[in-house]
Amino acid sequence: MRRLCLAGLLAALMLTAVMSGLGEVISFRLSYGGAADDITTDIYVDANGIYTVGYTTSFGTNTPNAFLTIFNSDNTHRCSVALDLGASEEARALTFHNNRIYMLGKTTAGSTVPNHFVAVFDTSCNLQTINLYDIGPGEEVTDIAVEPAASPSFYVVGYQPGIGAFVEKLDSSLNVVWAKNFKVRGGNDLANAVAFSGGRVYVAGTSDDGSSLEMFVSVFDTNGNPVATREIGGSNNDEAYDIIVSPGNIYLAGKTFIAGRQDEAVLTRLDSGLALQWIRAFGTSSGDEVAYGLTAVGGTLYIAGYTTGYGTRDVLLAAYAADGTFSHSFFITGGPTGDDWAHSASSLGACVYLAGQHVNLPLFYVINDLQNAQSSSVSLTVETLTPTMTNVTPSTSPPSPGVATYTPSINTAAGINSFYSRFCPDNLVSTSTTTVTSTVGTTTTATATATTTTTAYAIATTTITQTSSVIFVSTATSTTTIPVTTTQTQTQTTTNTQTVTTTATATTTSTALTTQTQSTTLTLTEITTVAFAEPVSTYILPMLLILIAVLVGTAIIIGRRRQPQPQPPTF
Image 1: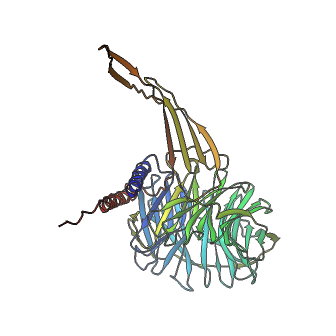
Image 2 (image 1 turned 180 degrees about the horizontal axis):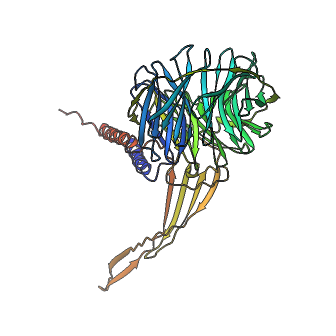
Image 3 (image 1 turned 90 degrees about the horizontal axis):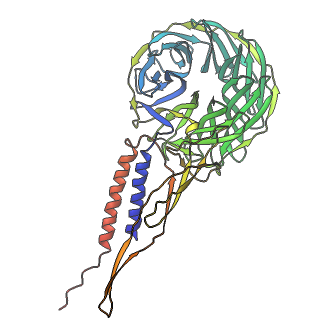
């Protein structure tokens, strides 16, 4: 019996290996970095490439260094540079305009450190210009946005502990136009994200009244004058880390604390007048969830961050329709040890891109267990506030940077590696089951009808019919069943002719030709649930071959042990 079980498992593994190699990989994950630590903090994508920034201790001198890494649209590496100002540098965010990448970062170079810098690169990683800014003690920068124009302007946000949040405007030559500290509640307020739309600057962050943290969004005109501010929160801590603005709506992503469930990722929608439309929280019963990135793909909103609901930190990706209806979620994990999480999200066409850091390889997409992870509405209060504004004058200077080009290792295990991932929801199928029934008679050709039921996720208004590959389903999920019927023709001809010769008592020999009719029911059941990671030839197939060899050896050993033992000699 053990040999039969091993043989069955062996066959299943061989089938899995074959199926893993079929069709395209629905989602794409790419790991990159060096022998030490490499962390991506922001990502931007267009038709010509994938642009990422972060910081590295693997490349350059005086590490950590800020880095820019660009990949071509086919995911091949184009160029990488490490930026060194003679101290410790970390890139925090980027924006893109007219084939130029604008990197925002922090550095311990200069006076009253830390300070911040903006560096401009072309799309081949060549440094064009850089400027260093000192706005005062303890400054931290978080995000940058562009006001598109022939001569663009840029808006930088951050905070200073004990002083409050700040917003800063730069011209196309990176000169300071104006800079302002502002307090929604107090000196520990944080500006975490910025967006520009329709002649307005939208800043999202966290206010601190000394007893709890609240989300806020403040709107400024292009001269830095406050237009409106809303604070959103309750008795527990609520924080906003990212913002996007679409026609008529403003969306905030962050986290909120829910009693009995700890921190949960939160998504909030306000209208153009900053009236609250809805708030949704997503989380697990046993862990923390945080949304650091936010992007839109068609009519679907994606939040990206991390979850600890399955042990250590895993990358979280959750989707909502524009009306707040929960659609689906995934986590991306490199295994049971190490932390993986997304710091940023972007989109292009029908695909969402997320970027961050991870530890182990390979990386797997896993559909979240909706019995453990769930979305819920949250009731928070909204207050209209007027921030306190203070004009500041940052000092500026052009530093003397060192720029080192390098080639990162791709999909190679290291300490902490950067990663980015592409996920296209139109190509999602979770499980597909096919049943084929055929009745075959003697010398008869039968036609069978196959009914295929595809369990898939209905993402917003998109019907998903991709069947080339699947995503591993961790446990039971809440799904929408989409029946799809196809017709297959199966031809099977069977002729069973038997000749029987009998001898009668009258010595007459007769030969009877008997044709037997055979009715056969063939049932083919195909259930596809593949945990897909990197290409099978890289990781999965070698491991399967090793496992197959172990199983074959085990089967032989067990078989030998079960053979009868020789009897002792008798005398």
